[in-house]
Amino acid sequence: MFTGIIEEIGAVARRSGAELAILADKVLGDLKEGDSVAVDGVCLTAVAFFPKGFVVQVSPETYARTTLGRLKPGHAVNLERAMRADGRFGGHFVLGHVDGVGRVVSVRDQGEFSLWQFNAPDEVSRYLAPKGSIAIDGISLTLVAPERNTFGVAVIPATLRNTTLGTRRPGDPVNMEADILGKHVRHYMNLDAGKGLSADFLARHGFV
Image (tube, rainbow, N blue to C red; front, side):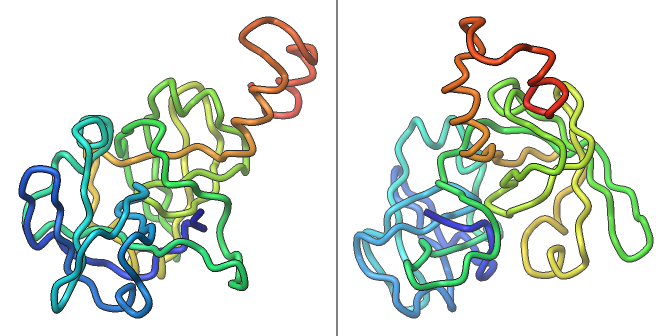
């Protein structure tokens, strides 16, 4: 499990078939073969190391269903090691299981912050709740005014400096993972089957 607090920005060293080699520094500190590491929000397994980085193996399905399939040597990527049981929990529950690829719609400065608008695929939008959490390329962010397939997030300068988000432009694709708590709530209420709490109750509390 991850928290969505990016530890460092790495870079793609090479891509050869299933193997993706990532240049890194901080995350190499205690990363071992078999450990999980999130690359742009995708949970992958470290399978080998080289002097300044590590290697992961990516399945064709993962390449096809995330932005990893677009990566080329030199591309910057967000990196986060799996959370330690004795560590601080600074973001939200992130599994590294990308629900879908969305896109940046617009970016607008608002004083010291910037307001980002995104378009989300149906696999993500059904779980969006006001002031809920979402992971964008592995970054833990808080939802602002979600409506159908669009939502906003307010981003502080530190996030832009310490992640790849600052390099994104309108139209760029991004990995999205909805909050696991929202997924479980929706599942257990069995909304798709028309069971559980009333639609009016769910709408008033931001679940639909």
